[in-house]
Image (cartoon, rainbow, N blue to C red; front, side, top):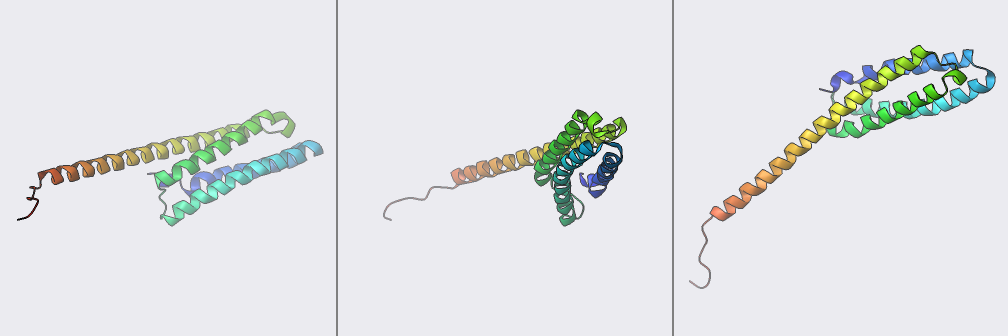
Length: 156
């Protein structure tokens, strides 16, 4: 279900980051250029680390992400993309970030948030099913124990 959002989903955002760094390098004054590139590199580094972890999870499971394991990772990725977007909006003029670039990052962030929502919803459903199955087994075990005939106690 989540495999369609594997490695390819995030590759476009990596291109976006590269283009943004190139724009920052060519369009901003020296002070802004250095500040923007350093700040953006830190955020992008966190984002790439989270993407690498998700891609490794998908690779280990032959392209499918386990929703329970992916949920917290995807939430962390969405939070980092929110941080990136907030930084870009706040520093748009200082860093000479074109509106199209911000729109592209917003679109990617929305996709990540949707995927995180799906994964967390499925993980919650799986956990609920496991709890119900455990409760049912416990009830069946208690019913089976109550149905067994009592053996006489004491000396025979």
